[in-house]
Image (cartoon, rainbow, N blue to C red):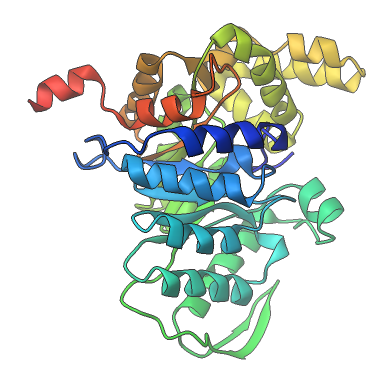
Length: 368
C-alpha cells in the first residue's frame, strides 16, 4: 500500500459516471469565493479510468473548487489526465498528489510539470511528490527504494527546483548526476510549485525547508497541529491535507473504512503515523493479528474512534464540520478525499462535494 493508493476501485466507475452525467450543473457555493481555498483529489478513483477522473474535475470546477489533484500507483498516469482536466475544468489549479519520486528523474518531472504549466499558464500547478513504498517502487515499478529516504528526497527536490528554473543545470550529488540539462520549455510568469507528501518529523521539516507546500494524509484533525509544528521548524510551506469525508450511512461504510485503515496500518510509515496520532494500542493489535494470519481479527482491531476520526462518513453537516475542524487545526488548504462507501442512493459523490464546499451555518451567519 502506498501514499496515494485507494480503496475505491473500478467497480464504482459506471455508477460515478452515471451520477455525474445526470446531475444538473449547480451554481458555485460561496466557500471558495469567501477566501477559503478548497481542493479535491481523484485518489479514490485512480483505478476507475480516465473518464471518471476528468468528470470529477469538471464537476469540481462547476461547484467552485480551487484545485484538482491526481495520484498515481498502477492506474491512471497523473500528467496525461491532468492535461485533459486542464481543458475540461479551466478554473482549477492542477496538482499531483502525490507521485513516487523513484519512477521519474527530477529532469523528467520538471519537463512534465512545465508542460502542464504551459497548458494552464494562468493557473497554479502543484508538483506533489513523495517517497512511496518499497512495494510500489520496487515490486511494481522495478525502481529502487532509497536506503536514506530523507537525504534522497532532499537532493531530489534541490535538483527538481534547479531544473524548473530554466537555467542550464549541472548537478553532482550522491544520488543524481546531471550535466548541462536545460528545460526546453520557456518558463512563464508562473512556475510549478513543489509539494512534498510527508508523514514523519524529518520529512515534514524538510517540506518546510525546501518545498512550497506539504500534503498530509491519513491523519485525524487532532494530529494536524503536531504536523504543522514540524513543518514550521523548517519554514513556511503551505499546509495541504487530504480529508477523507463522505455523505452516507456510517454503519454501511464502516466495514470499508476498517479495511482501508487496516491496509495502511500494516505499512510501517503509516503505522508510525497512526501511533503518533494516539492509536498505538490499536496499531499493535492490528499488526499482531495480521502477522498471525488473522485477517478477521486485524479488521476487528480497528477501533470505532479511529474510523470516525479519519474516514468520516455521515450527513452533510458532519462533512462540513470535519472540513472546518481541519482548517481550525492548521490546514491552509483542505483537499476533499470523497468517500462513497456509505451511499444512501446514487448521489453520494455529488452530495459530498456540495457539502464540503458549503460553509457551516455558523460561518455563514457570522459573515452576514
